[in-house]
Image 1 (spheres, rainbow, N blue to C red):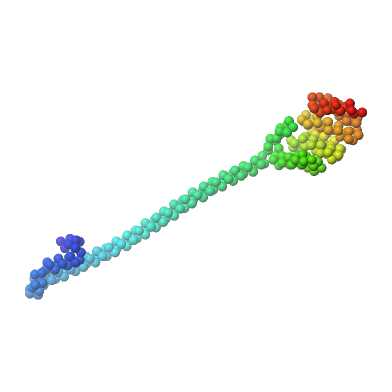
Image 2: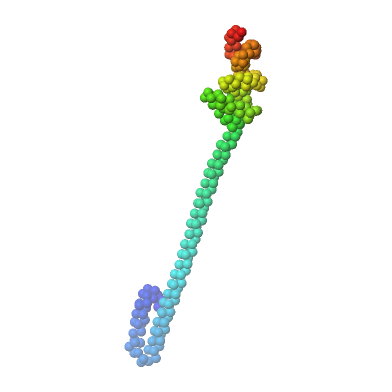
Length: 255
């Protein structure tokens, strides 16, 4: 009963109930043993109440400590979880960046490799494969020729045929080298280069033009007899070519 009243009304309520329950004993204080027993009982009850309050206070303090410790553990677990999530997200980003760099590197590697892969070229009716550097050097030499700098073109084309003796460009390179040499009046070199071209590839698309050019070189060298022979051979070898028709027109003029 005492504990029930304590829960409902607190310490003050319990003390009031105790005082009301012992009103008669206070009126006849120290008159008999019953009064003394009542006082002792009251003291015992008050002491029990104080002990109960103290125990409750200790329990509350302990409970608060437990709650504080639990909250600290929860906070630590949350921090670890957040840290783990952050590390996982960073790992995902790093992996994504690595994959992107790998794709970029692969793309760059493919592009660099393509620069070294042979390319198929179609030139003067012939198809062949050349290395990219080989193509670059030939195009550079021909660009000089097209600009009309024949002395520089002669040097560049001569360097090309020496550097790439097995190139598929060789017949065309010799043809234009012969023209460059002719343009700078290096007739002996021109004659040699045109003949090299014909010996290397007599069926080349520019072979008739090379024979016609040889006759021109021979005329410049004052060798009319050789020029007439070259024109006659041109007509026989390539009768349907434009160069053969030009040879027919030119023969009567040679004495």
